[in-house]
Each structure stands twice: as C-alpha cells, then as structure tokens.
Length: 457
View 1 (tube, rainbow, N blue to C red):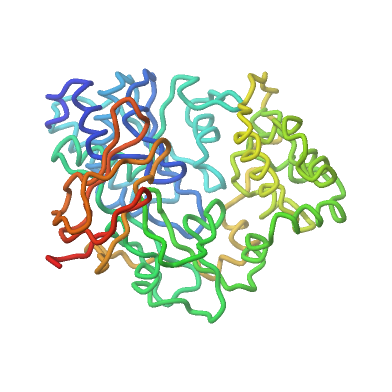
View 2: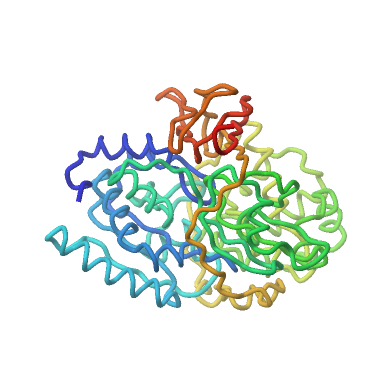
C-alpha cells in the first residue's frame, strides 16, 4: 500500500492538496487535524441523523477505503489506536468492515491496530463529545475539541477521500448525498460538487407533496434551503424534503422573534430540555431552560451573560423531543452563540460536573425520535446510485470549509478539465484548495464562486 511508503508530512501535504475537509458538519480542513498528536483516531460511522444513509452505504460498499483512510490518518498523526464506531444495527456495514480489516491486514502483512466499536441506536450518537465518551470513556472539556483528550475524529466519507488522495492523488470533486423524506424516489447518490440542489431533488423524482420545505443536511441539524439553485458542497450530506405542515418543518421555519415570544408566554421551566440535553448529561454546565428564561425577557441583550450557550452542540433534542410546549431552545442557543462569537467572546475553561447518573436512561432511541417528528413514514432505505450525477452548469463555492475563501486561479472563458486546481489560498491561511468537478468552460468568476458549463462551450 502506498500509504506505508509515505512520511507523515507527505500524507498531510497530499490531503491538503486534495482539498479534503470534514464531509459533514462544520467542514473543518482535514490536514489541520492531521497535524495533531492523538493516541486514538476514531472513524465516525454513527450517522445518527434520521433518514440519512451515506455513511452506512459507504461502509458497506467501500470498506477497504475506509480502513486505508483511517490507517493513513493514524500514520500521519502517529496515533497508536484506531476505532471504527458505528451503530450495531448496521449489520451489512459491520460484516463488510470486519472482512476488509482482515484483507487489508493480510495485504500489509501485519495485524492492524484498529478495532470496531458498536454503538447503541440513539440520537445523537455521532456528536463528537458523545462519541468520544462512548468509545473511550474520556470527556472532552466544555467548549473544547476531542484532541484535548488525545482523540481525533473524522467521518466515513472524509476517510474515503483521504484514502483516494493518498493512494491515487485524487482531489475531492464529488459528494455523496441522501435525498429523502417526502420525495417520490429516495436515493443516495454521488453528485458533482456544484450541482444545484434542484438537480438532486429531480433525481429523487421531485417532491411528493405540493407545499414543502427542504433541508440541507439531516432533519435535526440541517439548514433550511431557501433557494434550490444553491449548490451541493463538500459538507452536504443530505437533502431532506418535509411537508410544510409537518410539525418539525413549522418549528424550523418560524422566525426567531416568534420563538422568543412563545418562550416568554409558554415556558414553564419544567427543565425537560436540560435534563435531556446530551451535553448536560455528560457534565457540561449548560442549562437550556435557564437560557430560555433569560433570553426571552432580555431580547438577547448582554450576550456575555449567556456564555453557557457556547457549549450547545445544536443537536436539537431539546426542541424536537424534550419540550412539551413545542418551544425552540436550540434556536435560541444558536442565535446567542452567533452573537457571542461576533463579539469575540469564546468559551472559558469550565470544570465539568460528574456525568449524570441517569444518562443511560435518557438516551433517546432514534425510532422514537423519528415517530415524534413524523419522520417514521419516510424511513425507507434509499436506492443507491453509484454513477456520478452532473448538471449542465455547476456553481463551485470558493468557501466550502472553515477558514478563508480560496482565491480563483481561472477567469471567465477558460477551459478546465476534471480535477484541475481552480482556486487556492496561501499556505499560511486556514482553508483548502478547490478543484474543477467537471471538464468545461468557466462562465463566471467572482469572490464567492466559479461557474462551469460542461463540455467545450
């Protein structure tokens, strides 16, 4: 395997050059994680968002790439132990991974320092703080990241991208996405980056209802899509369609001002939101009920008084499952977090409480969460489409990652080929380069995106 021939620095260089970021969540540049020195590297295959199937499919179909990607990351960081963490109910993925570990071990002529950890079927099993505790028993500090306790975490598609970059020098030009919910043909497919969301919805047969909302990501932590011409990016893991009258869709669509007014008149301080909060149960000093009380009367003034909001993972359990009045503590926390960060306020070191002794009894089964949100009617295994889906014109964003936007290296009228470097940034800036997802002609360039029309114009 080529990865065993490369030095730590060479692997990190290849990963950066390939434009690899976390293939979900915040889309943090992967090469930065590879510069840390953990003792444990975790492959996050929990995929706890209801209805999404990307990680499950990739683990089942490309297990050797998952293993090789994890090995490459372990080699780059000198991590002694690797763990692939996934839910025990993913039987096909488990069987594929176990067989792949044996095959790759035989190829490398050594016993691989990688184990498989089976998680329970609860939400949010994939939250980094929860995952690290479940796998290692260590607790990440409030406001901190896993490396603080000697752990690094990457999701499954990220590791596959690492394997392809290290073994074949392939950059990231496509993204696996599950298109599901109230659609006629749920699918998990590979889309060229920059493909309009509308094209993804079209592949799924279009919406199955007249009035609907679309969510970029999972139904719990995704963001509402206001314009379906918005492109698929490196962090897009799902496109979920829900009827406009769905209770969860209505909560997501309500203006924050409405949420605050409802909190003022409806919140009875029952503390359900706090007692079900995964971070609170781990010992974080986060009390969503207190934030709701203070924020609803202070109209988000004096944000420094709400620093505990920075500990919120925005998993959404408080508003999707815990609150009996249908209030939105997560949205209030998210608004406060944005305001705190805008004012330059960062998390302060806080001593954790002991984990709540009732934590094991308060884990929310995914099946109950889906039923509560009316998502169980859409709980079907999507059709898997392996052939890449490409639109006639793609909008490739220059900032699909945490950090600075990449700078265009092409201009209108230029011809480009698939995988060509089309935008980059100085090595001292946090971020990753951008590559052409298809061969074609550049039709527009600005400081936000590069548009490419397929073919020769």
